Image 1 (cartoon, rainbow, N blue to C red):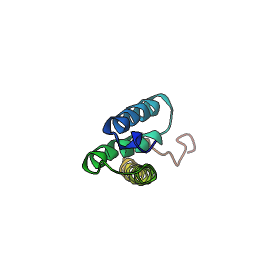
Image 2 (spheres, helix red, strand yellow; image 1 turned 45 degrees about the vertical axis):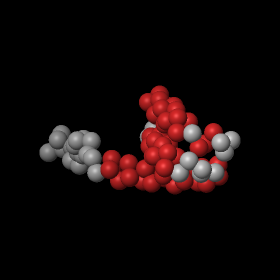
Image 3 (tube, rainbow, N blue to C red; image 1 turned 180 degrees about the vertical axis):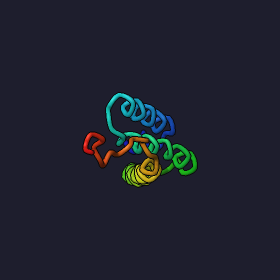
Image 4 (tube, helix red, strand yellow; image 1 turned 45 degrees about the horizontal axis):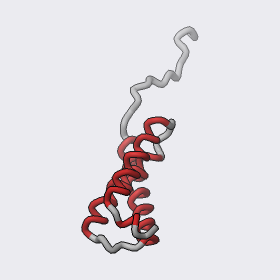
Length: 91
């Protein structure tokens, strides 16, 4: 398994599959994993002798960082919904 995790195309495939799951399943958890897998591609190309457990640990860290960045970025966006605090019929 460690040998397959050192191939760049495995991480690209994982990113594509996780991105597809993100589109099909409601929620936004899989996008962080997809971005983490995509961020693993340059690391695997730079360091081709990365072992399996280290690759999975780095993937988990990158996925967590991507998920936190996405939460911070999308929290700032407003939905544009108006909050009604008073009933217009009470006068």
